[in-house]
Amino acid sequence: MDPCVVAYLLAPELFSGHCVNIAIEHRSELTMGMTVIDLLGVSGRAPNAQWIDGVDSAGVLALLERALSTN
Image 1 (cartoon, one colour):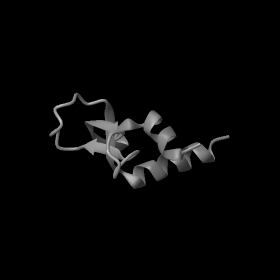
Image 2 (spheres, rainbow, N blue to C red; image 1 turned 90 degrees about the vertical axis):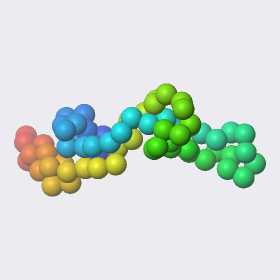
Image 3 (tube, rainbow, N blue to C red; image 1 turned 30 degrees about the vertical axis):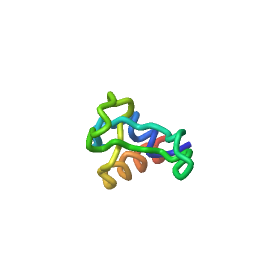
Image 4 (cartoon, rainbow, N blue to C red; image 1 turned 135 degrees about the horizontal axis):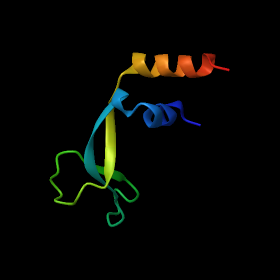
C-alpha cells in the first residue's frame, strides 16, 4: 500500500495540486500509450483528474509516525 495515498485520504490539506485533463495518447505512432497531462488547459477538454504536485513532507512524515506509533 502506498503511504502517500493513505496520507492523502487522512489529511488532504498536506497536499496541493490542480484539476487537469489527463489522457492517454492512442492515435500517434510516435507517442502511442503516452500519458498527456494538460497543465495549462490548452486542449479545451474538461478536467478529469486531480494532479498532485506538492506535499508537506514533514507533515506526511509526522502523520505516518503518529499512525505507526499507535497500537
